[in-house]
Structures are given as C-alpha cells and as structure tokens.
Length: 87
Image 1 (cartoon, rainbow, N blue to C red):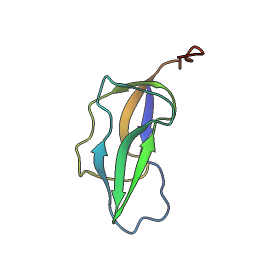
Image 2 (cartoon, rainbow, N blue to C red):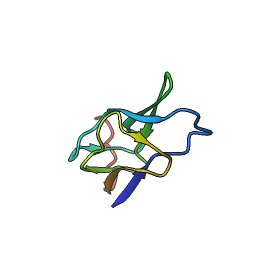
Image 3 (cartoon, rainbow, N blue to C red):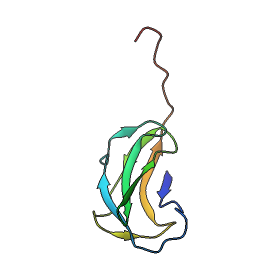
C-alpha cells in the first residue's frame, strides 16, 4: 500500500481543508488522476495519484482541517496497462 499524504503547499497562513473527493474507495486511478481537492482561503488545488492503482478507504470527511504530511488515503498500486493501438 502506498500512503497518499497532504503535500507541502508553501507557507500556510490559513487552514487547509478537504473540499471534495473525486474518487471513492474501490475505484481505480491512473498516474496523475486527481483524487482529492484541498482548499486554502479562496483557492483550491488537486492532489493527484502518484501511481496507478485502486483507492483504499476510508476517506477522511469533507471540511476536515489537514496539515502537510497527514494521511489522505491509501493506494493499492497496480501496473498501468497500455492501450492497444487503434483503441
């Protein structure tokens, strides 16, 4: 299992909150697919998948205040399958 944590987004003067989950436990993601939105002030940023895999829950609740390094979700890494030409 790979732990996806809150990234360091620079100096934080305001609380960082989970604003939206873009995937649910059991769903699969590809590398760089957005997984969760984090909001700070009026800005929102996506945290993306570092590898292909299956999302393993439970997910922290929306509006939870989080800090850099806090666990967001686990990813069960899976090999990425290349699409065949012509598909």
